[in-house]
Length: 223
Image (cartoon, rainbow, N blue to C red; front, side, top):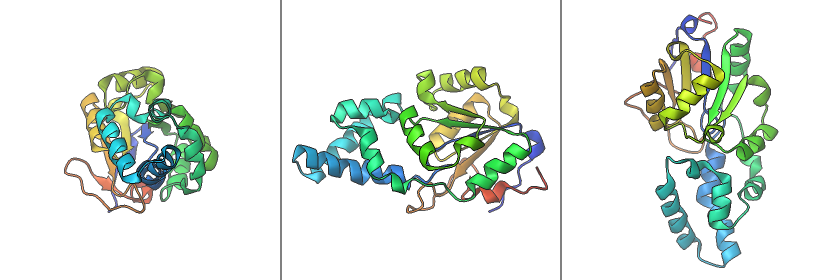
């Protein structure tokens, strides 16, 4: 599913991290399997009970900054979340064609901005194990602004901070809710990731064009 973007109408590319540039499998495995297992071990309780409790907690905080905050979860569960993430950091990996895509954008002087809800401590782990940091012009965590990407205030702060024209900006994310927030702010070009977790199902979207590899939008004759 090749998508022909009009690259001459795009100056800035905003990119999500988990599920967009990086495989969401690490995060899904961590929250659904590794964290409950380690919590159950530490607290000598059943893993089924832990999974139910953690899922309820996550539902309570979904879409808020807490949901994405490693400090919050470390306090809430009395565990060192960063240390636990390091235990399975071999699962961290880039999604297909990420590096050639970022390199090509750089060669054509497109502004490459990572915009993530992930906490800076998580970003640091991911950067240490992948080669993407050097291929980005700016890195923004929603924790820098105290607002998640779901909120309009995030986009206002982002525009003040990195200076982009919404009408000449492409934003790629794996969350429809967040893409809708960006659309509400006026960002013109929006793409959703079809299979954010390499071990998960492909998805369909009623709202946004879907891609699975950056190869599908990198027709260099358009750039």
